[in-house]
Image 1 (cartoon, rainbow, N blue to C red):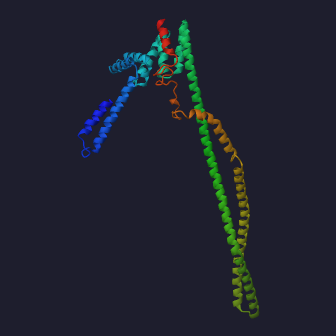
Image 2: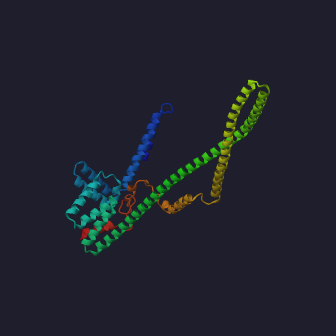
Length: 373
């Protein structure tokens, strides 16, 4: 394949000078080379599957296209029996047909050891359905008296139970960790909401304190001036009264009455200002007390290892969940999809999957023992 690519590149560039080699031609060249390498990688992958199993797989697909679904499922079953690496290839629905056919046959003949073993094999390898596989193998245990079959079946059941229990524990740990994480997120949202409310309240207190100081400063400047105006009006009233008595001139009497009206108005303003000033001074004392308490709380938080009991509980929960998090978050599965967890890796060679065999091929030996009965 590599020599073919080299010849292709040579022929393409032999008569192509830098002037007539267009950009599209270059892109086309690299596209052809990439496609050839991709096809060669596919062929290398296909070579890893047993040739007889590959042939049976291709035959099953042809039968399926011809509409012979039951025959196609049987041939496909022979293919995965030959080499379980076939399971990594697209079965185009043959696995479901195979399992349905086996389940129907077992229902008609529930004491057929070969059918039970086949259904258990397909359930474990193609569907990662350990409970169904275990049920089939337990049925075999109850029907046979052969010590070899019992021994291999018992070992297979224990192996499946062990992996299934591991899966259940893993999923439970992930669920608990996810629930704890969501609770922490809600608690954090509540903490942030409370913190925002507290911050808004503190800002409001600071603003009110600033306004109270501004009011006090303004009134302390205006009140003395108004008091001076009041005293001047009192003197003017006394002068107008004295002149009216000495001259009996109505001008002074009219002036006195006007001064008295102005005095009453300014005196009312003065009393209002003094009342407002007193309230501002009271508010300042109250707001300063709140500000001091805020500062004391902040200082206590700074001197404390935890800012609040909620923070302490939050950090404690994080530490308790860290053990589960470290062992669960390294998975490549989507954390919000509980259906992604699988027991059997059909491409890695463990648990009756494809690739290399495990330490002891329980299922094949069990099949041989049952066939020999």
